[in-house]
Image (cartoon, rainbow over all chains, first blue to last red; front, side, top):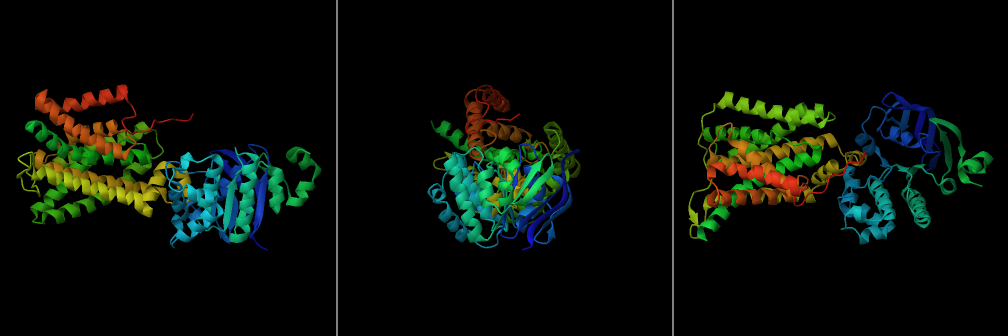
Length: 235
Length: 289
């Protein structure tokens, strides 16, 4: 299968500071790729480069089209749904308004999509009239994912969906991500600290350190690599 | 008691005008963290446009509608041309830009239309109502303002663009990730604020007479209303504007000479800032460092 997203020799910059030094990353169409690495390695920067939120060089190709020099809102409208660090929830708006915003770029009426999301996340249906800021962390993460899926994306970009959540909530969320990925035929690019869980679900994995890709391969191969096991999986 | 109620109602009429302008201030503040000191002068300039149209024998309500459209477009152009370049500048630089706009519009109006007071027609007859408790003119002003506010709240509550504007004001980065063109939303916000201001100007002009200084006092009252309601709260701005209108009228009637009424606004500003800096409905501003 051809990759739906391909980064080739991508460098990214914060002002004059170079945070990525030419990385190659691919996400298969319908696949799930995970980026592993320590804090500050450049994982989030990679996601930001994809969505046009930082200045980058090199080639970023999504579904056959170059993403560079496009604005974040254009990239979103092309079918890249990014759930950023900290979830990016509109806390002052209601749950339903957040979902409506997710459907903003869609021409068709968002009601069917919204009903589908309430099917995946019934708790959101119960809280649809509440302010998003009043939700628990796990519920907010569910809302963020649901909002992203409202865009009917071809690529879902998730930045540490497990951050700050209890292990049981994390497992529930990953189970839903896995299910949605199959049912909605959406490809996933994931950054995750919880390496063991991520490697179980993903098919490809990249290990990023200080702005370089230092290891890559099938998720299974990386999960079996003794060094990665020691550094990231802890056994 | 009769005099008291009379003053309350006429206070509500001027309060409705302050409320409109206060709402315009709050809209721009929420979207860009910027107090637009030129809001009053923009409204004054819009009123001159309406005045020219009326003098050219355009029926009043057609002139009113045309002026709102022109003001909306003008507001968007100002955002694009003047405000956008200082979007990421320090807030003081942006404030100076709005003060510059204030001076430009004031001088431009003086140059084009002279500083002579002009009579401005009222669309409402001036007849006493309810045993002279209020006049049809007051009622008309209040009605126009309420209709405009209702339309605005419906726009923000029920339309996709209104929702996108709220999202863009609240969390621009996240709004972009939803595919919302934040820049366009800001421009629409400035356009709407200019149109709201134009309504306030057209409603106040028959009372104050039209001249380039017409809105300076009104802006001060509106600013007081916005602060009183909490500069981040649209509902607060409306209620704050109404409270300021009534207070100003009552104090001017019973306590001090009406020439000193403007001081009431300043005293209110000081009281609000000293005792309740977030206003009645505002949220505390927390800055993460």
